[in-house]
View: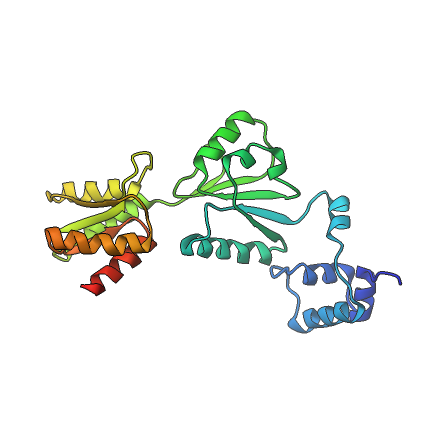
Amino acid sequence: MKRPTRDDVAKLAGVSGCTVSHVLNGRKDISISDATRQRVIKAANELGYRPNHAARSLVTGTTHTIAVWTADLSPYYTMVVNGLRKIIEISGYQILITGINREKAMRASAFGSIDGILAIEYPDYLLEFFQKNPKFQMPFVSLGVYHLDNIDYVGVDLYTCTYQAVTHLLSNGIRRICYLGVNNPNLYDPRMDAYAAAMKDAGLHPEYLLLQGQTRPESRTAIKGYIAEKGCPEGLICHNDDQAIGAYRGLCDI
């Protein structure tokens, strides 16, 4: 049985082949009525048509696939990836989500059949890769708190945001503010630096509760121990969401 083509779908739906491509690729940036979209989808389903992505790649030289490298899929990163997915799919592309380590990043096979890469917080891996491959041509964007600024990037300015958060607490009369963070001398933490600067500018003594990990159970236990030993601070600035949620749960336990 002959495999149905895009033109077969277009003929049955009464539209052009380009319209079929736009609809089935999920293009939302092109003005196509809902009725037309439904007619194309119905025609494709009736004919059993499925786009041949391999053939399209051979013709166009593109895969319409964007890879997202992510450090992990904890709640924060899941939210970021989901936001990227919506934008990527609206533009008619597919998203390939993958975790990657240093060894994979150094191999060309890690890039696979993709048109570009969005790398969330891989500064060490990326720096090493670009040093070894100065003529690398694939579109590549580094994004997040820990990003490379010598290639295309979208950075998150946590220093300024944290400084403003501490200043907000101080402006509301809160003086004893503790920073709940991570005890890792190899980790640059702009939030902790901003906290220290804001407290210094206010002439106040900083307090630190630094943990080996960043999990909710650790933070929950640690904040209770800290309060038992030193009393309850008036405010908390936390390294990340998981530590904040764990600390809140610990406060509710008391």
